Image (cartoon, rainbow, N blue to C red; front, side):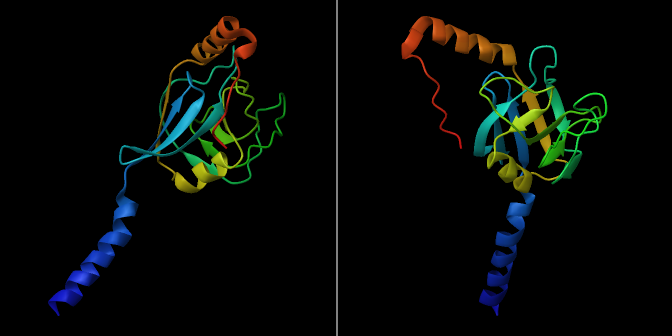
Length: 164
């Protein structure tokens, strides 16, 4: 009887512990990368494209307010919207979200955080409504580092993207 109760308690612990894991997302605009973190460990990461000059992605602490598998923007393109934003995870009520989109190895969005195919789907499945999202750094740092590397190394410089 003692071993049966111990087995049941162990089984419950194995089932419940992942549900209690602390999850957060860190978006580093200086690196143009996002990290899914669980209990302090990076579970997975991927390339992003943040807001371009004049439409910068805001820094700050956010929470995922809403998730929608097939979302259509009511803001972009101006004036009536219509842009597809699949795997949307809303961060603000003023239009900033993380979603699947084109990631050209530079800031290129109107303020949203675009995620690559595969990475967007994985993040969407992993994150829950209420998950904290920390956006930090500056996209201009990323562009400046790329310019420096290109000027310094010339033709010998290239970007190798290991993140699918």
